Image 1 (tube, one colour):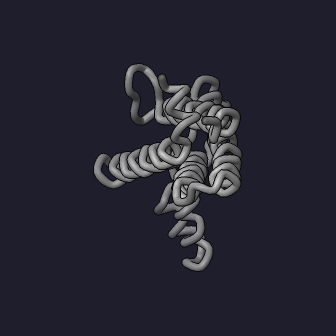
Image 2: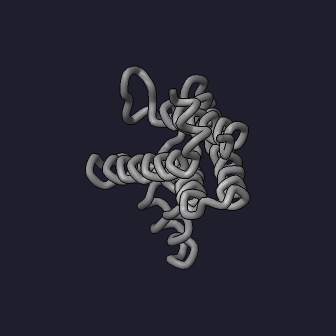
Image 3: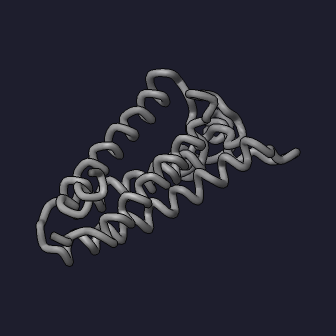
Amino acid sequence: MVFNWISKAPRQVLGLISLVCIAMLGFGLYLQYGQGLEPCPMCIVQRYALIMVGVFTGLGALRSNAGWWKTWSFLALLAAGFGAFVAARQSWLQWYPPEFATCGRDFYGMIENYPISRAIPMIFRGSGDCTAVDWSFLGGSIANWSFICFVGFAIVLLMALARGGRR
């Protein structure tokens, strides 16, 4: 049934993926501002990948022209693959943390040690530790769940591209 829906209604599938991406971004912002979790640089990169997947699938859902939605689906597939790669790397760092390095500086250290013109861009790169697991659900960290979601998006997008538009 799901396979038939993907092949018969690829634009609705793309719209649904876009809505899921918006919900995930909203949850990430809730964790950051509501719960006080600081995102690390890899988390910020995953957010950008999630934004790209959401924008590309949203644009793909706008028109019924097969060339249009397939182009945007392909771009979303690339973004999902990139997001999955970054999430897998962060998961690896969480499972096998390095002895020395973390992947970010704290906010106050940036402000104290750099002029404001350099500190502002650093703030948007994230400041948390990529190896830290600050939140988990069913035994999986944020990076683990991001990986699962990105892989799920990629699988659905591949199915839509392979089977989409067939009547």
